[in-house]
Amino acid sequence: YRQRLKEVQKMLNDLRRNATFFGTYSSLTNIEVLGEAWFRQMKRDLPPMEFRTSILCLPVDIMKDGFYSSMRPSHKYNSTDFHYLDSLGYDIEKLQQQDCRMDGDLQSEKPLCIAFDFNSNINCMVVGQTDEGRRRLNVVKSFYVKYTKKLPDLVNDFCKYYHYFKTHEVIFYYDTTALGSNYAVNDEDFRWVICNQLEKNGWQVRPVPIGRPMGHLEKQLLINRGFDGRARLVPYFNEQNNESLLISVQTAGVYNGKKDKRLEKTMETEESKLEERTDFSDAFDTLYIGCERFPQETVVLPVTSDF
Image 1: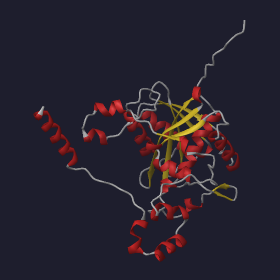
Image 2: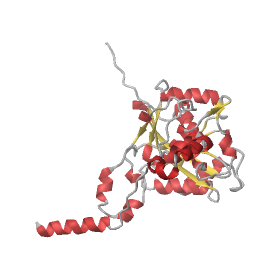
Image 3: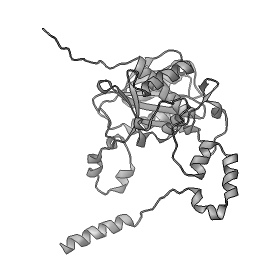
């Protein structure tokens, strides 16, 4: 018994050797040094969201008067395959190499649904799966690349993450912004680049055009009906796999009756990252509209009879 206890203690000491404690604290804990006047000035000078997150260290809240005003904390969930994690033991290197085997919310026999948003500086991709029986659209993962990395790199990141996914098939929803244009990736348009890169990686692609981009007001009403449970599908976000996407969705405001996109034209800063702006939420919009309005899954309903 003592020998076994020593072995366990040695193993714990080895694990603790490189352990790091991480904590977040409000600047208010240091008010004696910073002074009350400094806090008042920061509140005047900084945008409300930046003051809450950078100074008070509060989590990002859902804007009650934002574009997705019907979203609630209950639309976020966590799902980890702990059986797979347990099988890795204490192999830190394997734990750091994240892939879809760690996700517990995937339906391995069904294809993945994907949608994109395109920009010269950032390209975003949102991945979901529909659960028609439970009226859910699970947003299971999101990806983005910036600056020197372009659309093929984004698709490669997706393929690497889902290499172990059983069904190598995707339903690719896209609107007319994916056609006839390309930010100098090659001579083909976005739709071709995505389909070609997926097929090169051994994936089957089912492209589904959804037409012209939906108007802001119609889109806002449709998606908020979904959050309210009054549409065919209710969107839910895997919180662990969609950190930047959730910030983009939760902080998307409204300006002149449309989604507030004014930040998209400004330089990136540490407080205003490209992946946290409305580009990412636009990719989610396309995914939801596609899954809600253009379903590809056959639903078999039980039939009962009084005879």
